[in-house]
Image 1: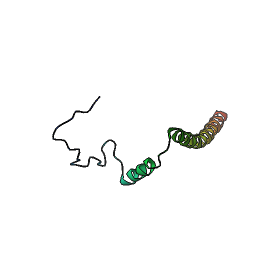
Image 2: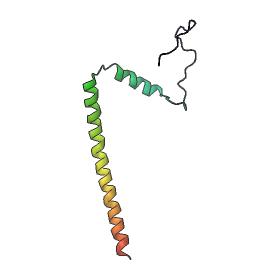
Image 3: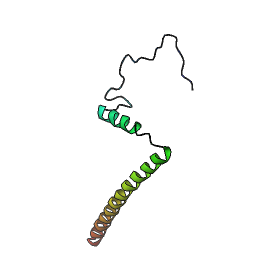
Image 4: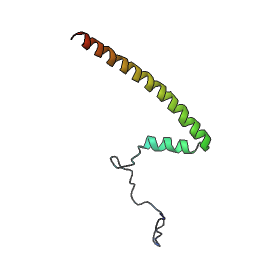
Length: 84
């Protein structure tokens, strides 16, 4: 959907709408980090590789956490079942 063009619109922003609590709010630190990432000029292939590398790192930690949690639940279940 194309934006409407107005004759009196010169593109200036009158009020900063980046206010804490509003949807899409970004802190100044996050804005600076986003600017740094945009200036890297990564290709689509590089961004995809970066995403998958970080995903694998998080997935490995999550898998270990879920395994430990499952073992804890199993041990509690066996402990409670023995008491009956």
